[in-house]
Length: 198
Image (cartoon, rainbow, N blue to C red; front, side, top):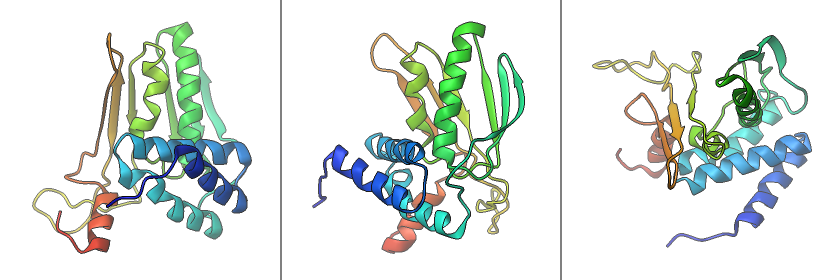
């Protein structure tokens, strides 16, 4: 039987742990929101399960806790950032807010982020666009993470390269979030821990 916990209690716990690790308070809130949204959308391998690895990365210095992205280029409908190992969840949320704002004026907007930390569940960001009657496409890649073997291979050479797409409808929005590999690294890790088969 699974235990059920209140959203606000989980958010308070996650935010408190992140703040205690030295994370900037505003960033902690966004990270907690994104991780919880991932769980609520059914992507529990990309929800609060990621909190412990994130805290470990903060402790080791692999995830930065303060600062802003460096702006590499800023055109009206195209922006490029260096994420400086800042939380990918916070960077992506900030980028989506900017993209929606710019798209209201220019009809479209693309934001690219290099060098950010892990961004968790891509679908967690799509509502920022669909609630504004916009379509969103989010793609992620981590070239240093060579965990996916090419078809027929056994040695990791590729990254999972997840893609998410969301668009509004007259009813509920359609949200798609998939890995271009057969499964996600999170699912492989979970099945390894539980000694189950995929």
